[in-house]
Image 1 (cartoon, rainbow, N blue to C red):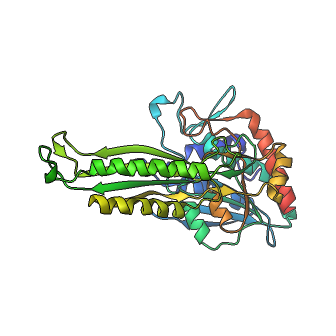
Image 2: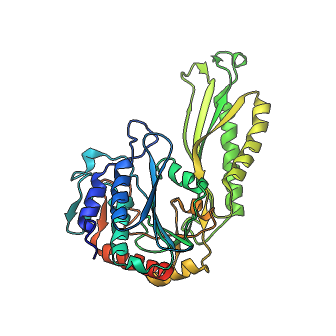
Image 3: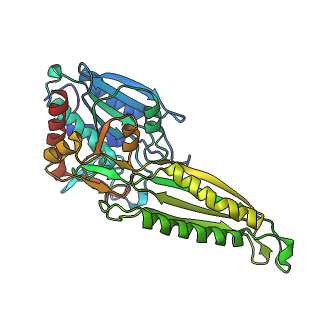
Length: 382
């Protein structure tokens, strides 16, 4: 074991102590530079060549660290940020790594700072001077909010490895596909007026009633057309999440807004779906003489699929001793796939622990995680 960097317990403890919350709410959002500096320092000590990318505002950074000659090789990737936390619901300090009977507790222990600590342990068990292909470790910014880190990385033109493993929590089972996600708002602007005379206004709320009907029909059509039994929910979903309109019962509603999400299956492009929704809304706007604006609330993550017959998925099933499956949550995988890389998601911990108070990394997944990542490195880099 290399003594140049701290041991697993200290690694995980320092990573958890380095607060790196990302949020679309500026009150909670913070820089991830402290965690990037920690990882960069440790990887420098191990002989990696490190590069830090400045991503957007508020001190957000990506880290790309590589070692080994030639081309191809393996990328181990994870996000450096966590979600915000409810301090009052934690039984221990969320920024202090606390070991209890079943694992290591702390904010991000599973999602996904534990991945970095485990990956570092696996890396230290490799004779790095004998690498025949590059080994790269990447830490991205803002996965939990805007995915700006992965978006920046995908546009940076870097030459990355042959295979990419994203260490999101999957209970160490390989995941070769997930749904996408898009969030948007539809805002209808009518004309307010005294409710005693409907002719004095033009109700945005009543126009929204028609929009809701069209969206529900559109959802049914999508679910009739697209199914994938590899998912627990085999159809694309649309959640009409929240609606706000009007301000008083005796005033005609002048403005009404709906916010919804759409989760497409692999093979369905988000922009195509947005275009179809626009085609549904335009006739309503004309017929009702209202203005209908759309706002993208979240840039969107495309659905992802790595063919189950590809080398990476086959190897992952062998190394993890588990059949590749699917998850409902979105990841950074589509951004790597857009670069032409074979990509899977495979990491320690359960998604059921993610974003929860008293999040923990189970003891019984640490050694198996180290062993699985070591086998990947040996296969793709040695």
